[in-house]
Image 1 (cartoon, rainbow, N blue to C red):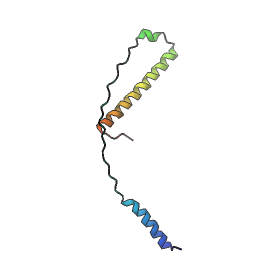
Image 2: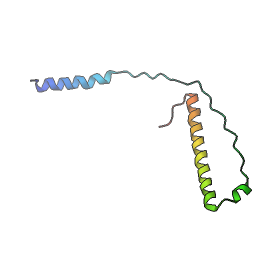
Image 3: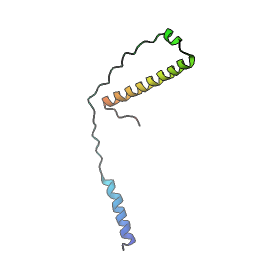
Image 4: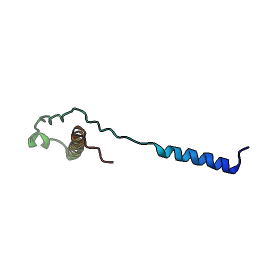
Amino acid sequence: MMSRYATLAACLILAVSGCATEVQRIPVQPACTVPPRPALPTITRDELAVLPDDVYWRLERREKRLTDWALEMRAALQGLCRGTPPDG
């Protein structure tokens, strides 16, 4: 049976042995370019006028969400191609 001191010494050795590791970070930058924004089709005011109001506003929210998402993804890709680490 191990004595208290032997148990404590074993625990201390195990705890301290993990502290001695060295972490090396090797930067990796992919060879990439951000693709250009695609040309979007034009929708005229007259084409939108025939939509019911609730459909128009749902379409408006949808477009805004897609635009915001696309801009976030583009910014993330630009950071990746520059080798900038992502936030968070």
